[in-house]
Image (cartoon, rainbow, N blue to C red; front, side, top):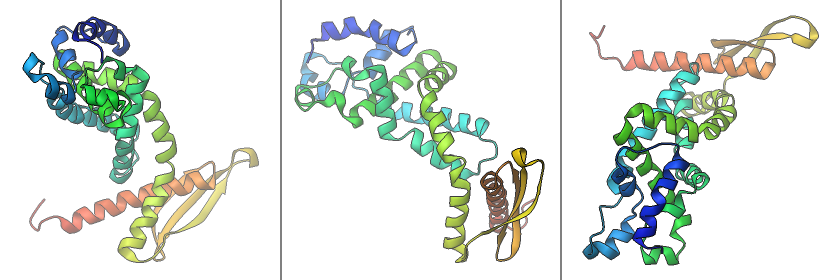
Length: 249
């Protein structure tokens, strides 16, 4: 465990890693103090640990990611967006982003955590990253926090979007039909056009022989995914109408 003087000296280096210059360095100080340190050195005048900032940072991170997904995935239903957000803000993902920043080496932790390699623990790293996000938010506002999150999570967001937004439309529709209707959706090609090297397929998805969605794409798979997305949106609207209180306009 390095001494407090070295920790203080390292904070400007961390600022460079984060790509953000704090108006008040005390916010970054608090974000990098783990509770294990304050528990061991409370009588020595240790500052407040980063748990409260972690609480705020979790909310700020969730807001930024949710807002970004709403803008970049306009055709994705709520279920898909929730899965994407859950993957992006998961503890392992946050810990990896923290490792990319080298955040662990800048934390002030107790002797016990130092012995058990606490600087590499997912829980400590992810919590510290959320605390840093909150510190940036408090110091520079939402725009500063948004810029930091979208920059540092860019590869994670892109990777999650590529793997999930396409695959989950059909999966989610199938899961819904099995769970709620005890049946499976069926996909039917209703038309195709264009030359062989640039064909366009029209696909309809049927649930109990009724068409619930239609989609078009340069492959059958793409068209099926779009049809499934339309069906999910229609199901969401239908469900909302069924549960809408009578007399509501």
